[in-house]
Image 1: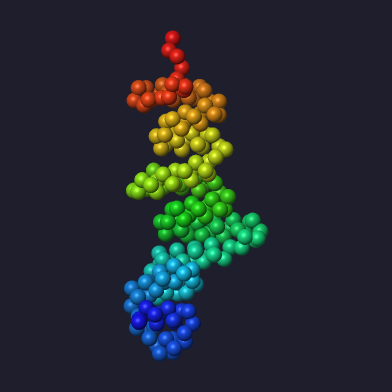
Image 2: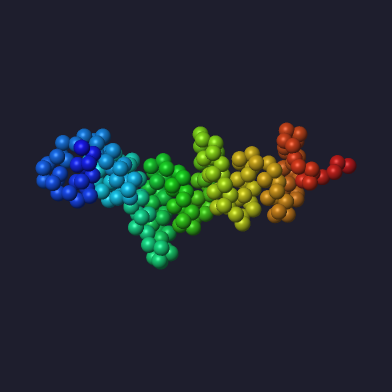
Length: 196
């Protein structure tokens, strides 16, 4: 019943507001209500709940979501970029790296997004999430063979690194890298040079 009264308060039922019921809610109740409202994309109302709960982290996340939800697809590109960058910075301050990287990608800041995805891929505790982040980093760096090579090197993806060097016709770099690897990593035969 309390949950419904909180929802009614924010959705527009004036009875709950007039009764003064909302003044007796605990911070935890406000936080839960804010999370419910975020789930149904009522970000402005969620922000108010998080303010009452004194939860700065969730309040900042809701503010970033509000910015994203208000971005118009037909807005001038510089406005869209500024809004996505602002939301990305807010997500980053909240520790929400994946959401931040998505915003930077949408702002067409591929380098920033790629670097962030690479960090997520290297440090995410869930392997499946790390793989997704790595694939997104590759997507960000597509077309820049040097950045792809650095990504693969950092992640220890030797075969992919050698392929990117081969595709970029950086044969000397590939030979040097193979020499650095020594026998510790098996290199595909088509990347090896015959020994004389």
